Image 1 (cartoon, helix red, strand yellow):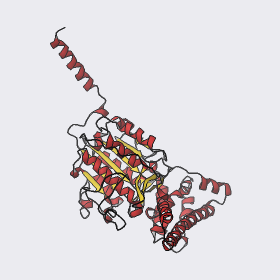
Image 2: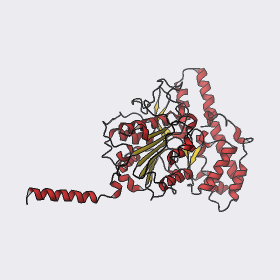
Image 3: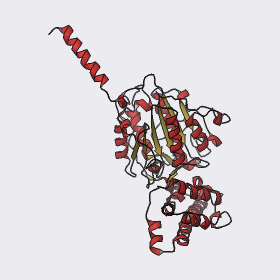
Image 4: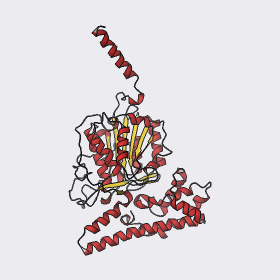
Length: 445
């Protein structure tokens, strides 16, 4: 057989192979990569969330996604915070370098809200005309979109400095984007307690969206890397595991499924989950985090120091107390710590009273308080949550309370509006029990 004929056959075989590739492995024709990064918290105790987001930006930038297609939300109260011993610098690993330098300040301060975030996802320039940079997603049907969120969460919601975004509203926005052909494929990573509840039973499998979360629908996520110098946690377990993987791997060779499995195996404190169109996980990570090859970064292994995210503030106070050599400072820290613990006990007792007022049955009360029901009735839950926010305190400001909120899912399993009405009427409002410490979120985290 002549060499010319052999070459022709090889070319034909290669062409057939290319034409037979599954559609989900094909690079979109003339497609761009877009990213939206959101740190939903504020205050020094929550340093880690903005550190996570800044680190994610550096990964995307290093792998070739330009700033005009990366949209960043963060309160921006950490880098130059008076508590920062290295002003203007944020790190995400005890031995890591600065991740703050160069990060776009698209939406900061009071602009970091669920409303602004959803407007950006929808490409609604008019809605953000008076906020921040005004950048919104301008992606189309050939583009890939990457969304990464880091903050506190609770069943069926993720928190922002002011307010919360419900699972129902997030998924409504995702469906809007699908209907308007705003992406070819979209990948969403969420770092938050009970983050699986943002997608479980509500994210469709047929709209070209793939999501992974730090925890399932009933578990807390975890903070990690306590730093003695800064006296706060530098990162979150799920987040640092996927990002440190992206730092060192060749993204054009690693699939999303491989990154998911690595992150899941290394995040031992919670059950990392995946949702939506799982076939997208066969795509390369580079199709969402940047197609440009870059020199790998391998950070040294250090003590993880992992702790439940909603317990981080208490652990920070405890470590400060043990470190202090001043009796006056120790006394102040001890009072503050005791206040936080007392308020947590108060919340638990009040929830128990509300449950007792509604069910009047010891076995049913025990069932409600001890079992973690999964969220299924989003409308009912949002009704109760909205009333609670209006009459008591905002859940976004009291992160610990989300561990008590599972009791209300049972209310929504009842077959009528009766229990919802009784639940709402059971709340004493601002003139009653919940007023304690409600204006001091430091004590109520």
